[in-house]
Each structure stands twice: as C-alpha cells, then as structure tokens.
Image (cartoon, rainbow, N blue to C red; front, side, top):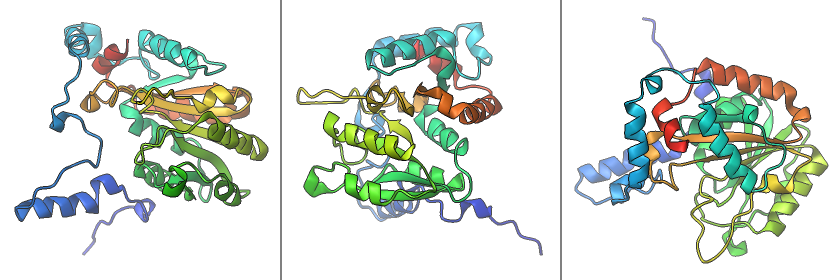
Length: 289
C-alpha cells in the first residue's frame, strides 16, 4: 500500500512554541491542571485589547471596496509610506518604498527572507536562546542554524567571542533579536557596534528582529542595529502585533537598508517570493496606514 509521508525538507524542523511542548500543555489541561500559555506572546487571552483607533481603522477598511481586493505585493503605498517614516526616525540609512515589504505578520517575513537567501548547507548565526521560528525557518530553507551564546550571567547579551568562533566560509548572516525574545534583554549600542564590526569584517548580512522595539521600559531607548551599519546590507523586521496588541490581525513588515548594491540577486529573490503569495491581509494594512 502506498503511504504519504512528510517531506524530507521537514526533517529536523521544529517550531517549539506550537509543537510538542504545546501538545504536552494541552494534555496537562485535560488532566485538570492549570497551564498559563505564554508560548506565543498572544496578548488577547490576558485581557489586553487593541486601541479603539486601531479597531476603527480596521472597521473602516472592511467597508472600503478596495480593501476587498489584492494590493501591491509589497503592500499598500500609504502603509509603506508610514513604515518608511517610522524607520527613518529610527535612523535607518538608504531607505526606499521599493524595499519595504508588508506581510502576514513578521513570521511570514522571516520565512520569506531566509528562503530567498539560503542554499543547502549555508549557515546563519542565531541567538541561543532564540525565538524558535528563526531556527525552524532556516532549516526549512535548507540552511544550517548555528547558535551563538547569550548567557544569563552576562545580562543575556550576545557573546561576541562565541559568535566569531562560529563564523565559517558558509556563514551568510547574523540574526539579532533586540529587544530579545525570549529573554527580554535590550542590547546597548556598544554590543550592537561589536556585532556590526563582526558582520563588516566577514561580509555578512544582518537580520534584525525588532518586533518588541516599542515595549522598552525603565527610561531606556532602543537602537536599531541598521542605523549603525550604513555600509552593510541589513533586513529589519517589525510590526504591530505586540505594540498595538493585534497579534491576530497579522500585520508585520521587513525593511531592506544600507548598501543594497551587495544584494541585487537577493532582492530579486525576495520580489519573486513576495509576488508568489500575492499580498498581505489588506484590511490590516490599513491599520498601518
């Protein structure tokens, strides 16, 4: 009898926040135990509600006939204009509307960005502990995730020496999650500059996951690593899921900045993949705008 198995591409792919750990949590609940679900950073079950202005924007968008059709594959122009303005204020260099991509959450953008880059056997440096989608998406794209240490005794900051030791001729890029998920660490400018210098020395891309950049407390400020790297090619990820408490709306984006001349082929790949999925959720794009 012929059977159908999962693709070989999925061997070694594990998305822990909605995998075996969640299955075990559900089994515990069936046994009558109380489980607090903090696995995916979902604010809604804990009573956090979106601002009314966000809900009003979505309601108005649903009544607009143009929101019922596809948008440009990169996203609504007016939404990308707002994203451009936000990241200009954060100091990102060399920005243009053509290099901003809106997706169904940052998760989609992470997967798309790695699919466009990695060949089988390519390596990418990812923090440990990490947001597990980065590891899973790298594996699915055919790459090898290589984890660098972020140690609790050092305030959960990246171990730059460990990072450098793990760079090989197969390394394509470095993932920097700042503010960090899951540790909550906010990296100071001095740490970010060391990472930039490392990427510069070894000619690496930087993937900057900054979805929590507006949830910074105690009077501290967030520095976008791309603002420190005008001569490098940086992909920055952000969105509204956390800051505006609309995780279910799936509203995220990625921004390409710096020296884009180094990444013409990569950008072509990103454009291809962006076009293949047609566009992101259009009503949610109006919330950005």
